[in-house]
Amino acid sequence: MASEPAPLGAAAARQLANTTKTPPQWVGTTPRWLVSLLPWVPVEAGTYRVNKVKEADAKGIGIECSPSDGAELPHAFVDYEENPREYTLSTVTTTLEVQTRISDLYRSPMDQVREQLGVLIEMVKERQENELVNNANYGLLSQPPPEMRAASYRRIRPRRGVPPPTTTLFGSPFLTWRGIPLIPSDKLHIKDGASNILLMRTGERKRGVVGLFQPGLPGEVSPSLTVRWMGINQRGAAAYLVSLYCSAAVLTEDAVGVLENVQVEKYHEYRY
Image: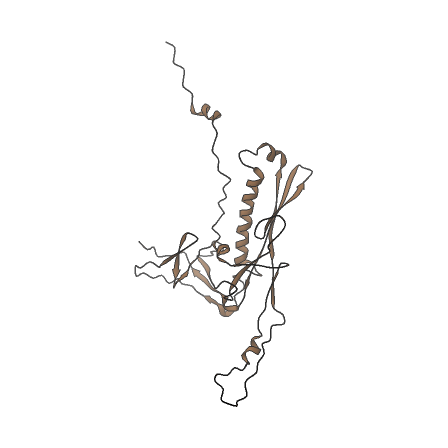
């Protein structure tokens, strides 16, 4: 007796089916809360100058409260620092090469150049936030003076069973300490179970911390981020230059503090 023909199998059927694909996923992408929380100030010619008053002269200024009749009124003037600090924008940059034969033949349903640039821009933005924290010149960890640094070797954990209150920022909940939100960041590196905690006051009006960027750049795809075509080389590869210009300025010494060597490998789990 002849056997019945087998029905169409899944492996063969897939040859006629369209596969739904995702864009390339990079595991290193983070929320980048610091970039979102900092107020960003546009600068001209890539330079931001922080003018301050000479502290020695300010202490000697005479100011009277309710002087007596006929008393000589105090006189004063405010003198500025002669060599104020200037912040120059740094450049986070890289180049991308895409073989034109590949981008021509394999451009549907996703554009190869666009997807390559998309992942690369995410990497550049992650490096930007890392530099805002750890850069030796303008990073927030390097700027606080000695009096705004404190060492800690033990983490105090309340165990009264009352979870710390939370607040919502950018649609996400954050724990708070005395009303101040605690924002996590993987750019504050952990070594031997210890890390650092930054305490910041932000904004120009509050004489705090601000981010710096250059607006109106040629080839700008987002504030201070540019993508420029560099041409096609002898190997037939199209090259693109990706650059992001940024820095961070601390307007007064008490605008940022660092709690150093905080033990973070242990925590108290609250049961809600």
